[in-house]
Image (cartoon, rainbow, N blue to C red):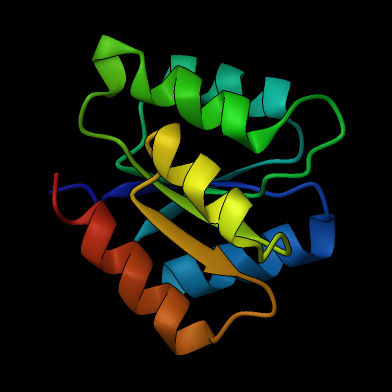
Length: 124
């Protein structure tokens, strides 16, 4: 059986790679995207079990990507975990409004991230 697939959407290449390593350590398969348009392309190619999503991307807002994922019937089981430096209640509320399943902030605890991603990715 194939491992659940997680898409990491983070524009900082080093951080994207680090988050991807944690996803793999959690026993999951990982793909990465550095921009919102790359993320949309990856999702259209193969719907992931979960997406770890930064909000501040160079070409579009992570909120818009989350809204798009949650509004796409083919992605009905895809879980979205926002991972961002935006730590305000307004941002958290906006995340809930666009359908995020989890909202984590940077800096993050690696163990908590791995547990959260595994819990959400293995639900599908």
